[in-house]
Amino acid sequence: MPNLAAGPRERLWVIGASALRDDELVALLIGTGRRGVPALALARELLGTGDPAHLLTQSPAQLARRSGIGMAKAARLLAAIELGRRALSAAPTRGDRLRSPAAVAALYGPRLAGLAEHFVVVHLDQRHRVLAETVAARGGSDRCPVAVREVLSAALSHGASAIVCVHNHPSGDVEPSPEDRELTRRLAQASALVGVTLLDHVIVAASDFCSLSERGLLPSPS
Image (cartoon, rainbow, N blue to C red; front, side):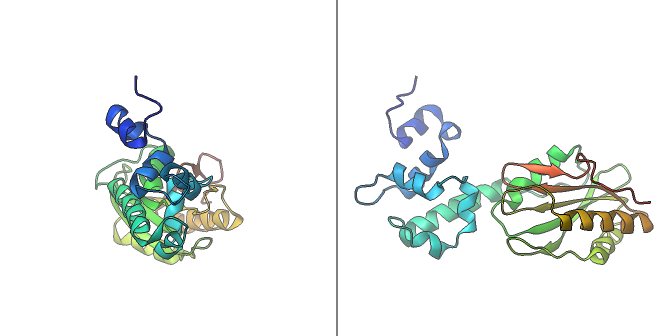
């Protein structure tokens, strides 16, 4: 059995990186703490009550100003988190099937974690195989204006028979807002007019998701 009193580095060698807690991984990245505060305690301060993706919402300057961090540690932290996000952020391959809202969330949750709000449209053929994806809009932390006409124009240009819309809530709360519901209603109705089916609108966060289809919130196009 691993020595539970050992530090994060020793525990990593014995039980593997995937078994370490978030604070232990952050402690390994920053390496040292500050006077009177060891690296593990400083890591817990940085994480607070959030998950590691929360660190991506802070600018390098914001992190560097934290006591005991500085420019070098802030750069290491953000580079490591961004590298991990990119490793999990491969776009769906043409011909893939997105078989469930959970599969959509598993693909896009990590990709969009820590980013400002993005609205992504996945274009599908008649058998619901992926043709392409487009980013229909990029916004701020709480607003992402989406043009329905542009969404449908892109769908038609890719020859899509159906679409799945995905967007992230940087706040971590995946509950659909009234604006999300209204946009979904407009997309469903407008898509039907041009022969495209809106299969779902999935809202994702770092560790949670909401499918408007599963919630019964996807309106009839009629």
